[in-house]
Image (tube, rainbow, N blue to C red; front, side, top):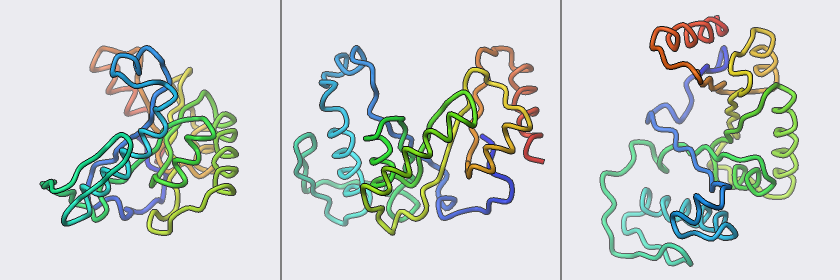
Length: 192
């Protein structure tokens, strides 16, 4: 992960956990856990609401279609008020709306800054369709370049210009620890 140059520690830095959430898209995976593909988005939204009840309410209770509880203890509570910072993943209109409505940030991937521009347009459209809750603050942008996995200096600069808060790097297909370390060092050097 490469944090945007000059970005200060933010409100999420009181706790170190960033919770990445995405409903999935592969039918065999959904079938394996007993979830119909058509229910995954609604289930994800409801689980996020239920988790926030567990994290924030002194006597958590939630009654929904997929989650139903009351009179439960939910300890230990998260360090950060309102729970961990939630990063919503996905590239569909529903994922963009979910990020705007329920996430502290969005996480996506692609092969270039131009791919990111397409996703940012999707997020802008979603923001015009739904109202972002003020308590979530500014939507953070997290992006992982895939294929190629190497990020060059020009691309890193362009990602920063586009407003990326965290540029995620993933050293696949490397397996040798020395090669992974060199890969990470090359990418860390891009922020200097």
